[in-house]
Image (cartoon, rainbow, N blue to C red):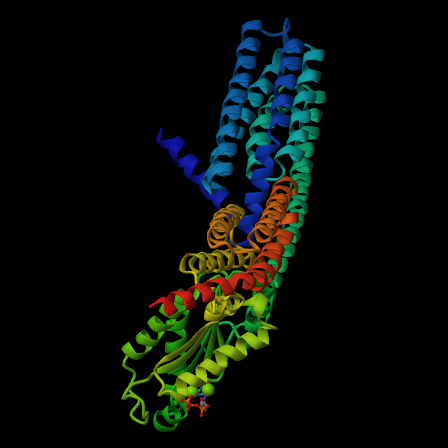
Length: 549
Ligand code: GH3
Ligand code: MG
Ligand code: MG
C-alpha cells in the first residue's frame, strides 16, 4: 500500500511538472478537454483489439487465462468510461481541475497494464496468435500517439506498460527471430514516443496561437472600451462629459417627443467657486468638485438617467420620464446633501459652507423646439436661482404651462350672454361648462375614448332637456316665435343625434364633425345668436314686473 502511495506521489509530481502556470495551464486545460471529449475512440479501439487478440489466442493458450485477460481489459475499459464521464461532468460544471489529469493518466495506466499482460501470452501462442497480439499491441501504441498524444503522461502511462512485457518476452525467448522482433518493437516504441512528443508540441503550438489571438482580441476590445469611456467621461469626476450629455439628450429628446412623457433637466452650479479656488487653492477646489459630483451621481444613477459634468463647476442631469415633482424632490435632496457636507467656504457671501444653485425644468419635448432650447430653459432657471440669492432651486413645470395654455381654448361665460330668465341662463351656463369638458377631453391625447363619450353624452342629454325646458318657457310666455324656435331646436337635435349615431357606427371619424357642430351650430350660432331673438320678452316682462311695483 505504501509503495503504491509513493508511486502515486512520483506520478503526481511528473504530471504536475507538465502543468505549468499561465498560458501553459490554459493549454493543458484545452488539451485535456480535447482528450476527454475524444475518449470514445481509444475505448472502442481497445475493446475491438482485445476481442481480436483473444480470438487469435484461443486454442494455443489456456483458454481460461485468455478469458481472464479479456475480462481484465474490459474491466479497465469500464473504469475508463466511468472516469471519462465523471471528468466530462466536472469540466462542464466547474471547469478544468489539474488533479483530474493525474487520475485520468492512472486509469489509462491500468489499461496499459492490462494490454501488457496480453504481451506475456505470446509466449505459448501460435504463430497467428503471436502476430495478431504483437500487431494489436503495436497498433494500440500507434493509436495512443493520436488519441493520447495531447497529454504525454497519459500516452506514456499506456504505451510503456503495454509494450514492455511483450519486448521482454520476445527478447528472452532464446529465438533469434523473436529477438529481432523485440529490437524492432523497442525501436518502434522510441519512434512512437518521438512522434507523440512532436504531435503534442504541434497541438500545444496551435492552442498557444489560439489563446494568444484570443488574448490579443480581448485586450484590443478592452482598450477600445476604455478609450470609449475616456471619450465620454470626465477625468476628474468620472461623470459623463459634455459630449455624452449632448448625445444622450438628443436621443432622449427624440424618444420623449414621440411618447410625450415628461423630460426633466437639472443644471447645477457651485456657488462662489472662483473665490473657493482663490481662498483654498485649486487642489481643494478639485476635491470639492469630486464631492459634489459624488452627491449628484448618488441621486442620478438609474438608467436612462444621466449625470454629467457640463463644464467647469457646472453639472447637468437628464431625467427622462421624471415629472416635475420628482425632479424637484431630487434636486432638493442634492442641494441639502451638498450643504450638509459642511465643506468650509469662508469667502462665500451665501453661507460659511459650500452651496450649490440649481435650475430645474420639466418640459414636454413635443412643445419644445430642440434639446438646445430645453437646456436653455434650465440654464435660465439656474441663473434665476443665482440672482435670487444662491443655495436654492428655481424651477419651471413646462407640462403644467402647456395645460394652462390648453385651458385658454375654452368658452368663457359673459354676463352679456344672459337672457334674464334665471333657469334658462343657468342651463346655458351648464352647456358652456359641459362644452368645455368636451373640448378639454378632445384636446388631451392621453384621455381615453370612454371618458370622451361620457362627456359627449352628458352634453347631448343636457341639450335635449334644456331645449324642451326653453320651449315650454317660450310657449308659456306666449312668445310668437316659439314654434319656429322649437322647430330649430328639433332640427339641431336631429342633426346632433344623427352625427352621434354616425360616430358610433364609423368610429373616431365622425366625432370631430360632431364636436364642431356642437360648437359652431349649437353654441355659437344658436345659443349666442338665435336665442338673442327672444331675449326681449324677458327684459319686457322684467320691465313689466318692475313697472307693476
Ligand atoms: P457663481 O456663484 O455666480 O457661480 O460664482 P462662481 O465663482 O462659482 O462662478 P465663476 O464662473 O465666476 O467661476 C467659476 C470658477 O470655477 C472659475 C474656475 O477657476 C473654476 N473652475 C472651473 N473648472 C475647474 C476645475 O476643474 N477645477 C477647479 N479647481 N476649478 C475650476
Ligand atoms: Mg459657472
Ligand atoms: Mg459657480
